[in-house]
Length: 234
View: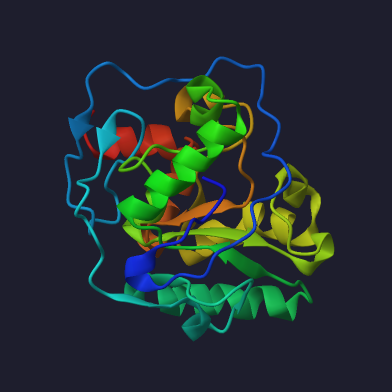
């Protein structure tokens, strides 16, 4: 997911879309199945599996949203929210990167079902109506981890707060890839795993699953998608 549309119900501010989406890999992608199933856990559960097969209800909306800025992190625009359960560890992560002299900013956080619908439509239109192209870079409504309120898209002043795969080579991107799990965050869409995740490599997209869960996930050696499937018994 790479663009926040306007959510009138939460008075989110508009954001100019990037000039182009990140390049899609030529690897085989996992597409949407003919039958979509409801998530097996509540959206409030940190380990709920949300992907191209399992969909959140359209009316799922976290009830404990707080401003991302409560963590002390710099944000690219006002009106971004995250679940309160994330704030303390996000603040600790911010403090850790600061001690390394690394800049970090948040580009995107919670998105409602309605926002994701607008986001997905934007990318379908951007790609000339190609649903296949859009499905590689944006989740359909109900299938986005951002709806959980526990997912963040990061950037840094190293790349002028841009969104793109070049984030992986910044000091911020390298640090997050190595250390984000220590603060409860997991890289959701790693490089080379398009067939498993269904999406292009997103080095900026991290989902919070809690420190204890993240430690277990990291020790497993599995990518998050595969590990969560096991945790959900699917």
